[in-house]
Amino acid sequence: MIDDYIKAKKQGDAAFNDAVHEGRNPYLAALDQFLDEKSCDTVDIGTMEIPVSLITGTKTAGRQQTFACNFMPVLEKGTEFGTKWSRLYESQISEGLRDPILVYEYLHHFYVQEGNKRVSVAKYVGMPTIAANVKRLVKREETAGNDIYDEFLKFFSVCPLYELNFTKKGSYLEFAQALGKDLKTRWDEITVSRVRSAYHHFSQAYKNVEHTANDTDESDAFLTYISIYGFDSLRQSGTDTLRRNIVKIRKELQAQTSKDTISFREVPAEKKDTPLSDLVKILPLKPEVKPIRIAFIYDKNAEDSAWIYDHEIGRMYLNKKFKDQVTTEVYENCNTSEKLKEALDQAAASCNMVFTISPSMMKETLKAAIAHPKAKFLNCSINLSANAVRTYYVRMYEVKFLLGALSAMYAKNHKVCYIADYPIYGTIASINAFAIGASLIDPECKVYLGWSGVHDQKWFSLLDDLDISIFSAEDLVSLKEDHTVFGLCRKEKDGSITNLAMPVINWPKYYEKLVEQVLEGTWNQEKDPDKKAVNYWWGMNSDVLDLVISSRISYSSVKMIHLLKEAMMSGNLNPFSGELRSTEKIIQDQNGAKLSNEKIINMDWLNENVIGVIPQFDELNESGRKLSKVSGVDAAKEKI
Image (cartoon, rainbow, N blue to C red; front, side, top):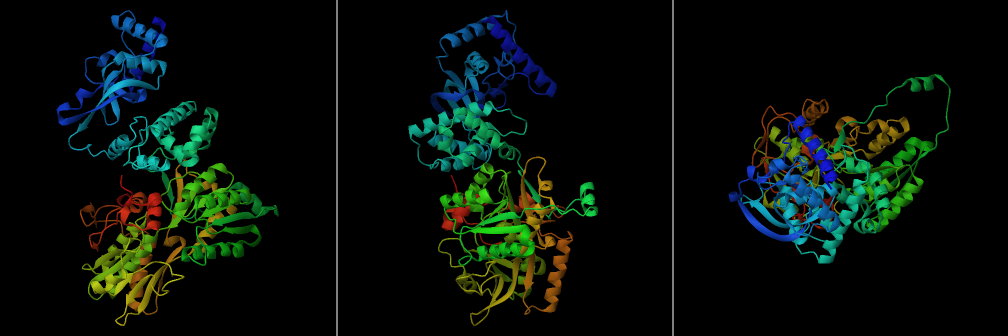
């Protein structure tokens, strides 16, 4: 067995030399050298199987230099250590490692107190797990601000497995919900056993796929796979099937590797002239072009929903604009997973391009996009990361900034009201842009915040209670309720409502520009070279978003709004550049550049002149909870 020791030592020497070359510690990490045990509470977890891959180092420095950083030996073969390692390896081959090792766990990694050679042999032979007595060290100042580890501890309390080592916030809750579980009630032993078995089954297949530096961590890949194919499907699939499916979703896995997983397209792509396009201009060739078949899939219908009605106007415009080049079809009331899946499969079988118009439809849309790679899928949302599905929406905060400025011009008592629907991506940015616009016109203006998507909140009563006449209501005209309450309004003394201005999304123009990308051949130009998800996030300078102002507004006010609009469209003005202050702290000083798209979309703070709060998940109505699970800002996410 000395030959195996020599092979193991070669692996150790290679890891040692690589670490030295890269300026890293070539030996095992020693926990005692960077953590004061006296500052921690010790929790006895007991004896259990732990993943060998998560054994990072040794507890003390005594055996630190016996092994390279990969736990392979570095001492010569003729040493006493080499002889003992070889005997232990022989015992493992013939009988297995029976006695548990002793490890300390800190922040989801293990450090060996007793059994370093057993770990070395286990890593050499490729054992996935090893029996261990586990003691957990937790700093008394909570978990040192580690949100992911805090989530792991809650997961471990209901499902005592170390294998799942997610890297993104919210993943443990997402995994639990995928299994129909939560992180409050202890999971039964059968479920825990199935999770362990499924993970190792997936791990075996994942390791057999050729990987690159862009591939995601194994646990994150496991969660992505389940979100697409389902937990039961994973358990019932053979290794070859798993491997093929992993290859199919390779781009989705790679899209998750970096913190910024989305590539934002702020303006429509322009067609690039090539030598071939010049040739086409010269030659009188008119190749036969098959029409693009486009499907629009709605969760409601145009008769009941103003949102659907606006998109339906866009669909009908495509038929008129492109005539023989485009045909469209509609799938309405796809309000369950079963109906949506059926509609997506039917649409993908006959169409080149498929639009789904709600963030809540993204999960099934992604599944369909992977199953039907020849069709182009788009979902109307922002900040949802999927390589196979492009997303699209407008920079609504630009118009809200102008509405805020206009509201302050007509508020007589420095008070205006803003009614939001749900705390999802982009909504907080719209609130803050409105508030910043108001404060530029009137530094004393306060914006009182109400939420139409919160249980039992009668936001209209805020107006009378706070003596407010100017308010920003929902953006769309209601098809069933009061048709007058939309956009920026003024409540008159007799109780009637006067409309002052409203934002308008030009969906016909938006869809026209998206379809032109396919017809003109710029669709593939928009692919991100780093395999990030593509998100179209167009604004007023793309002619897809504007502000309609009532004739009741004075010419001087209109002139001011037009000046602000022109400055914003030219890039000389942005509500989120320069000094920004929330209700609690200074976000950035006066020299700060415009916030990144990611920071704007994920905004979860309120501007200093906003009076109100971001509602919690439990306070939202059913529709709000459904949307928040998919695209809610962190402050409104479901709490573990």
